[in-house]
Amino acid sequence: MEDASRALGFSRAKGYDLVRRGEFPCRVLRIGRTTRVVTASLLRVLESGEPEYNRAPTGDCTPP
Image (cartoon, rainbow, N blue to C red; front, top):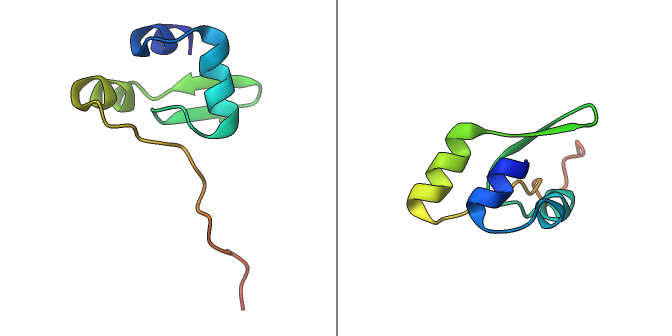
């Protein structure tokens, strides 16, 4: 998280805030209390400048 945040140009605290809001520009994995950035996603974002947000689907997922 710290290295990815720095590579994207914002602080560690801002990076964690964006993860919490689902707006970190790369894919992240939450494993217990650990947050890991997917390296391939970080590289794609750095190359293209296009974010890959982690937002959950907004549709209703309950069966009819």
